[in-house]
Image 1 (cartoon, rainbow, N blue to C red):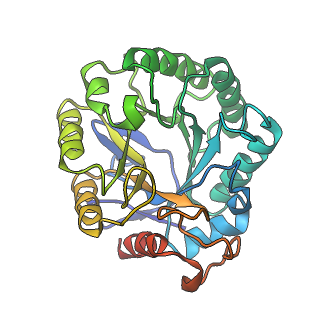
Image 2 (image 1 turned 30 degrees about the vertical axis):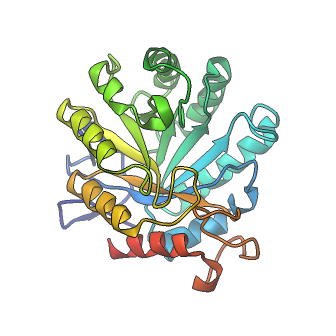
Length: 302
């Protein structure tokens, strides 16, 4: 199986990725762009956390990346039901590996839970040590924490992962729902080896101002990974701004930035890609809502 490498007419099987400057590269040093989707919170939409769904996303949507958004804080999430959370995440990760895809194991939290996060990522790193498909997103979207607090948390969690897997690719969030990436650019982690910083956008709300902020970070040498994005308002609802979504696609392509679109879920909101009546996998176009079809078409065009 293969993924498309940006700026190079070459194909390569899944291999170890690393960070070189602001770019994600393969073992030959060629730029790589991963594109795919994020599953919704596992605690609310566990039905999509199945191997058949991942296979469909690879074969029919041409995803090279899937993100397992493991809820941490809400009712029924990791802190309340660890066993269910681990079952959902590992099912998706194992399926992605079997389908030669990359997978983001996402600590989908809005606050700091250092002790729990360290324990979780230690378990994941021991399970997936040395497997190139697995990417660790250690903090989904910091909301009220300062960059200094997020940085201290990140250093502790990264140290834990690195003690087990020295080469794993790790994604770090920034304050204000991953929009204050300029703060991370001004005070980055000391050990930046194979670390990228996440930027999240919802195109109808986050426009040129956020791209300018990201441009600033790139110019300062900060590698960016868009681990969550969509075309509507930041609430996840409202009208899809197709023109702004296309501007973001062009911007990410220009800078060889990987992305995952939100979300594989069936909530009554614009950003949920499926209807409640849709099957768990093997979707026909009639099963997919407008946003899901836009994402699917965006992926198939690449």
